[in-house]
Image (tube, rainbow, N blue to C red; front, side):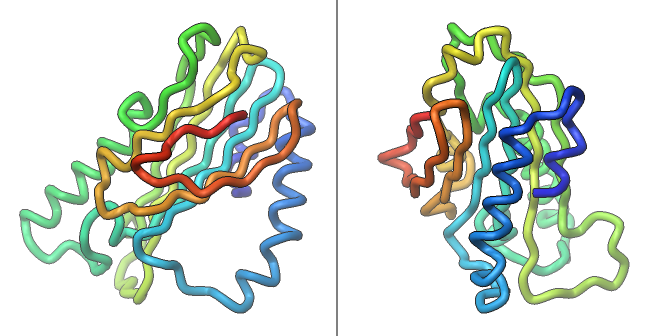
Length: 180
């Protein structure tokens, strides 16, 4: 979540408030539940002025079907395919066309990147998306298409903050639209 702040160019008060509230609400939960849950992922969304920012976090199992370091050429290809899919935001999310949003930055963090000898039981991918939207007042919903690309993902917990307030909702493949 802190990584989301690196994309801020003009300082987004709502995003900073969101990060603070999210951290306070989940600090105790993370202390008790350090392990992630297969099938579940998290999406944070902040909308303000002419910007939409999203942070997606998911266990590797949801995206790859395994959590260990790739052990074969096939698994290495699967890893590269997942990274490429995560970079293609239009495959994963849909904002209203009337908002005229343009993806201006994306960053994907693989649990198998620069870490040598890392062999954790639970590994997570993170992806960060920064959109510039001249019509953010028209960003009233977000369609989450992650389920189509990553069928092992059963639920996405979405937390949003915008001028309309804060919201949290759990999405599934058949119910994949969140109001912003």
